[in-house]
Length: 233
Image 1 (cartoon, rainbow, N blue to C red):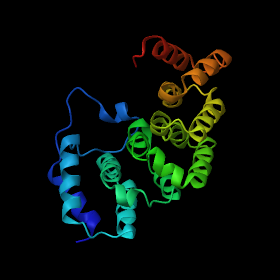
Image 2: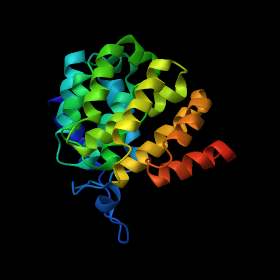
Image 3: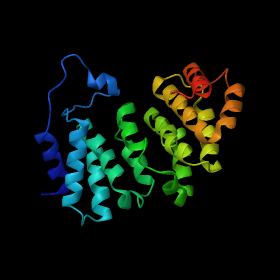
Image 4: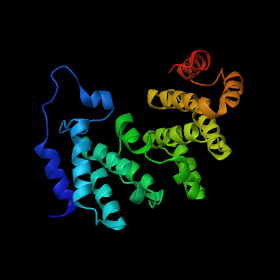
């Protein structure tokens, strides 16, 4: 049985019940159906699957993720992100072009962030920086709002992990590119990225906030100022 079919069968076996008083689709920002598999269960499935298939090739790994990201259920897309998290050796070899391709099938902050939030580390991006920089700039200018969010979220971890100027320069560049957008999927991501920048680029954030306070989303100004003052999220 192909790897994808094995994994989908596992997910369906552990499907849960739809919550009575909680609209998951509305919360995640898309209308994709869900199997309601819990995150701890998805993590357990991933660990067991990877332990069983240690001999999977890079191509097979990419093909599996591509099938999951094209899948019908939001659980497929979220477990693909968990596979990336747990598969450092395979993840480090992924060409950034696949991230762009996978984003074609993701809608809403939940699905986008499951791919982009924490999986790609600063040192991994630096080893292939020209391709990552090109991709992130391209995403920021996309007509697809989910890709524009991804251009911000992909940088939240690297700017917090590293003081490398390449990350902070691109982060501020993308924020300026998107600062006048008012869709919450973008305004919250701008706020998140600015707050992530504080760890290694506090002075730059302070100067940036003063200079662009009138054009940045109000929520980003408010939340970043609070973080600078209190140190809390």
